[in-house]
Structure formats: structure tokens, C-alpha cells
Image 1 (cartoon, rainbow, N blue to C red):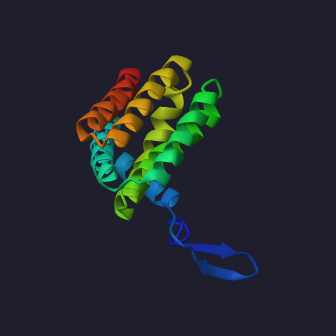
Image 2: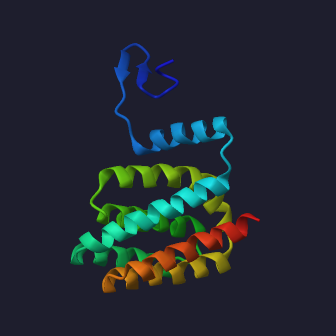
Length: 172
């Protein structure tokens, strides 16, 4: 049972070892729980939107020059790889994770990562297969960056809501 929950790992000929929990395993458990409870993906998208808004507001208070440069670098890398879905998705994840990191709240970062595991696996991969969607998302990433630079919670909230609305539209 502990092996199934990724809490213990069995190495043949060597014995059992306690595993260190990681964000992906938390996301997998969280996803199983959501599936078991029958929670619709739309509810998860709504929750992720609110979580990102909270993260964004904290990031505005805490962001410094170095993380902004990293967010800009990731934005540029997404821009350069807009035609390559896999590279784009990887950078998108890193962009949002860096934004969560800027909140300076490890719990928010872990929660975001867990939501991303679920929503990324079920929705975003399919949604971002379309170049038009990635271009739209890039505009929203740009607006998020601008809002962080100008420290505007209102503009950041607007950009995040537009970002998530794009995903909702492609779910229909």
C-alpha cells in the first residue's frame, strides 16, 4: 500500500526505502482524489485562476529585478519557440512556476504545481497544440509581465483572467 502511494520504494535485492515526496507525486495524488470525487475540470480551472491571482498579488509585493529578468527570459524563449509546442509548454510551466516563486510562499508554489500537473495533463497540452492559442497566451504573458513591472494588481488580475478564459473557451 505504501508503495502504491509512492511513500516507499522497493529496490529488489536491496530492500524498502522511504521516498521523499515531490510536487509531481502530490499532483498525481491530488488528481486521483479529484477524479474520485468527480470534480469537473471547470472547477479546477476556476480554482487555479483564483490561486494564480493570489500568487500574482503576492508576487507584485515581493518581486525583485532578478526574478523579473528570469520571467522576461522565459517569455522570450516562449516567443522564439512559439511553433514548437513541447518547448513552449515547458517554458510556460517554468514561467508560471517562477511567478509562483515570486510570491515567496512555498505553500502557494506547491499548490500551483499540483494544479498545473492536473490541468496541464488534461487540458493545456491539447489547448496549446494550436498555434493561435499559443499566440493568444503570449499576449497574456506579456500583459502579466507589464503588470508585474508596474506593480499593478488590477492589470495582473485582468491578464490572468483572460489567460484562463482562453483555456475555458477551448474546453467547450
